[in-house]
Image 1 (cartoon, helix red, strand yellow):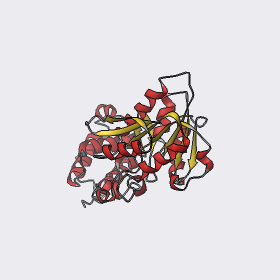
Image 2 (tube, helix red, strand yellow; image 1 turned 120 degrees about the vertical axis):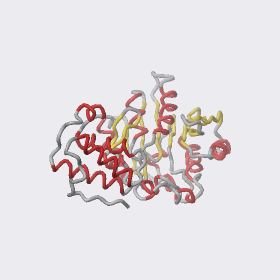
Image 3 (tube, helix red, strand yellow; image 1 turned 30 degrees about the vertical axis):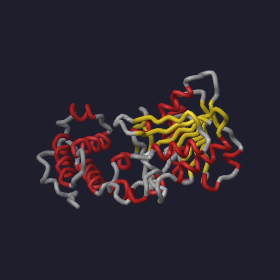
Image 4 (cartoon, rainbow, N blue to C red; image 1 turned 90 degrees about the vertical axis):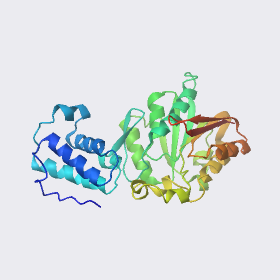
Length: 299
């Protein structure tokens, strides 16, 4: 690993924003971090509370020693493969800034498609009240995005991890959605009447779908930092889909929709699980990279 001497300033041409940005880019490049320049810029912007345009406007601003030390510590964390989003303390999802840390899986842009498909259903009849269940809510990104953009939805957000739910609750409160989103601590493989008493119009989930053999080969910033149980089922990646469909038999209303995010090469198997579980009108949606990403079905 490329090491940083945080007290050595001889590497800096001067103490300006531009010089520090060049320094950060150089170190991240030597540390084999992808998109080194972008990472260096985003970390400096995070430290200074600057947008990317602010950095360009203030490139001649001289920084004090304390700020330089703090920036170097951020660069050091990134070189150790800590995800940029954890260092920043948050990420953008559907135009919303959400808190994330090591307690939760980092929301990916691909999941925005899942939210968009849910919104299409909820916006179809704006005078109807929809009841939605999000299984494995993590940071709460899906319910927060849905509730923020659609006022006719009430959501139960379920997760097995109490610590993850604390993050979700912070994001829910940030956007003042506590009256419409309820967090529930629940293991869906050992469920009780906390959710079985409800009937939902929509069940949505971005479950741990990475097969364990593939998980072992993932990038270090995923394996070393993101919660393993949010990434993989420690099996073939299909465990949660079968359980979700099993649950849908009891808690999904007739005519209700189940939508899930899937991994590469899983569309056929997940579609079969949906079909065998009694769902109809099964559809597969592709993401921007033309990969099958969402499977939906109607009860």
